[in-house]
Image (cartoon, rainbow, N blue to C red; front, side):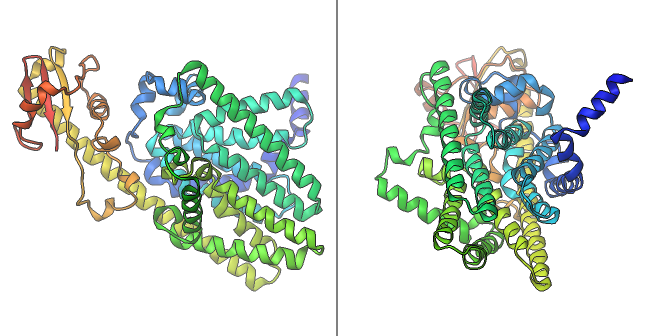
Length: 496
């Protein structure tokens, strides 16, 4: 009984306990909204494009290039399963958003606006489907924010070393957490400066955390260099500075940032981002004129807002390219921060009502897009499943011996779907298919067939030049003869 009393006393005096006690309602509402917004993904049984890699845990790429996720695979193997993964991810997102602003003297309602907007953001919807390991990426999202909070006012060198190592692991899980760390830093710097107007403290915070991030990036690359010969070409291919003129790349990045802020296709979710950008510009004018009195303070707050924008897009600036849509994690913080600031300084009831309407509108816009695109994912997966089942039936009917691995199997071509149903419309990555991803990747074809029952000991053969005359004479799928035996040892499947 004495131990229970001691535990109760420790919890009562612990900041973690206070955190959950003070913000339990906000966290609960945010998680519920996040679940509702992502309901199509969470409660629909399907596999993501790379789920089979984590199922077998055999991909050397993840061991070498994303060793952070690989580590969590062993620590939390249950977190890769459907529904468990997404729900864990939603909880981590809500905690990350809450931790970002929890220590500031802001009303709980304003904090709630920020957390809800981050949690309901469409910029998290892709990870849940494409990698089917949202728990791992979002655990490291939470870790990234925790590292920033721990190092804020800590002078213990040992804690700094631990923080840098954890941040390096986070970056190895998902490289766009680089931009998340900088965005979280700038949000806190701006809020602190509005409160204390201390330019020196703001600069020290920026410098200190920039050095921490640089150290983490260096460690991340050192580990990759030790376990692998080079940075994976998939990532290197996005670094435009290597192949294009520097000024052209900078012009492209500036144009891209403006397009995202003021509306363009998927990346902006047009109306929502335009509203957010207008509110950001209003706050960039209002704060210097009404809140800050000295000229240097007014100039400095504008500079901080510019740094915030650059932080949000820092991963794009670093690579010099647009990058895949699933890397836009930091954009969620861009969508939430200006709205929260606007609410904080709305003194008139009419303006507060306007803020409520804006918040509600943004959530509706975001939720509508998330549901739309996740429905496209579901339809695409069902189409892939139908195609894979058709191929399996044809293969087994024509060459049943392949079930006992007496033949190898080879694939050629891919299956595009240009005339999609209107419910499957949207940004192309949401229509990413096992049969056209990576411009036609036979490994993808093999993996979905294995997911649906093909024995894993059946070997896949690469198409070589000697096969091409034979393949040229074959009809394409869905013709009955699109599957034929070559040289009495390889079953060739010709798609489109």
